[in-house]
Structures are given as structure tokens and as C-alpha cells.
Amino acid sequence: MPKKSSNPKVILDIEKKASELRQLVIDMLLNAKSGHSAGALGTADIFATLYFHVLNVNSKKPNMPLRDRFILSNGHICPIWYAALYKKGFFPKKELWNLSKIDSNLQGHPHYKSLPGIENTGGPLGQGLSIAAGVALAGKMDKKPYRVYCMTGDGELNEGQIWETAMFAPNYDLNNLTWIIDRNNIQIDGYTEKIMSLENLRDKLEAFNWFVIEIDGHNIEEIINACEMAKAVTQRPTAIIAHTIPGKGVSFMEYKFEWHGKPPNTKEAKKALKQLRTMKGKISNG
Image (tube, rainbow, N blue to C red; front, side):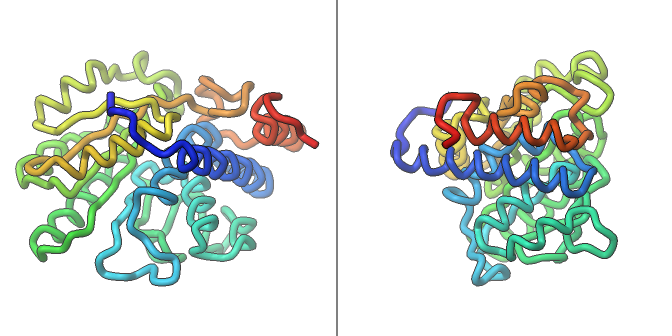
């Protein structure tokens, strides 16, 4: 587990951002009447940490050559990516309400360059890590200092292409690549360990010569420190296994694989937003 060293005010600010992102996701999915709830809510803390602390990106200069690249492989959770990009200033809020509409820039899976900040097309599972490894290799060949971050789901690790890249990246010493695995233990048909067991995942990745860090994917301090540790690794890529709760923050969604690809209806959204705004009753909703 990464050591603890972050500023409490920084942590609190990111936690607030994550809560705001979750609320936006609920509103977007309700408006679209389609989309994936569980993974988007479960990764909000990671997205908030990346976009408001870790990534070297600039919404005013979205194509600056030395920017860090973020690749979303499990593209179905893109509402949380869109929410983070909006909050970071990459595009106006009105775009969020076009989620999944015909000819919209915000489709149910991301399209490369459809809006500033979107670095890849996501949808076919298993491909994002290959894209990220290619971008990381290009950076090393060009002697550019940018870093590449890739998020995949855990159910996505059923795809053979993932393991081809898991061999490729250490072989080329891609120390500028950080692979974040959303280890929420669910996929569309059920629980990962019942469908295609992944454990012992850490041992498997280490056998492929990845530097592996396991964290609580809802602990901002651990996310920050894991990303900092990855920067210090000099001769191989880093995999961060982020243990998360699918549907995090909404009690009736948490841990339930049925919410993998399901949006809330009006009644469910109202209940979800109340919980998110009050942190399940911990603060006043006044």
C-alpha cells in the first residue's frame, strides 16, 4: 500500500469534486435514458484525482504536445470521463445533456477527437491498453516526457489482447505507462470470479514484469501516492489495481452487477442524488 503524505485540504477538494462528478453522471444517465451506472460511479474518485491533481493537461491548450495522455479502454463508463472533462473546463456543461443522442459529440462510447480532451475511441473491450502502449512507445522514441495513463475494467481482462500488451509493455521498458485496473469484481453477466476468475491478479501481472500497486480506489491519498510511485519506476510499466465498489455512493446500486449497464429512472435518480448530496445523510441537505 502506498505511504500517506498528501495535504488534507487537497484530499478534501478532490473528494468534493468526485461527489460532484457522481451527481453529474446520475443527471446525464437520467437525461439520456441509457448508459452504465456502476462503473462510472465507482471510478469517480480516480477520475477526480487524475484530472484535478495528477495529469498534466490544460483545457485552454488541449493539444499541447507535452500533455499527459489518458486512454479509456472500458469506454462504456465514459459519462464519468465526460463529467471530469467538463469540470476541468474542456467544454461547456450543455454538451453533457447530449449524451447518447444521434450525431452528438458525447456518444455512449467515446469517439477520438469528438471533443477536446478525448484521446481515444473506446468501445471494443481490450483495445485501450494496446493504444496506450503505442502512445507510450512513441513518447519514448521521440524522447518526450509525457506520461500515458490507461484505465481498463477488470471484466475486460477476459480479452486476449490485454495479455498481449501485458507482455509488450514490459518488453519495451515502458516506464512512462501507468495502467489503472478498475477492480470492482463485476461485469455485465455477473461477478468476475464466477465468470472467468482473475485471481491471483497481482501475481499474474508481476509474472509479466509489471510493477504492481494495490490500492483502495476510493482513497484519494492512496490514488495520488500510487501515481507518484509509478513516476519513480524507471525500467518497467506500472499497474495499479484499484479496488472499487461498483455504484459507489448510491446504496441501492453498490456491489450489484445488475447496474453495470443500467441507467436510473426518475425515482431512482432522485433517491441517488439525495444520497450523493448528503453523503448518505452525513451532511445536511439544506
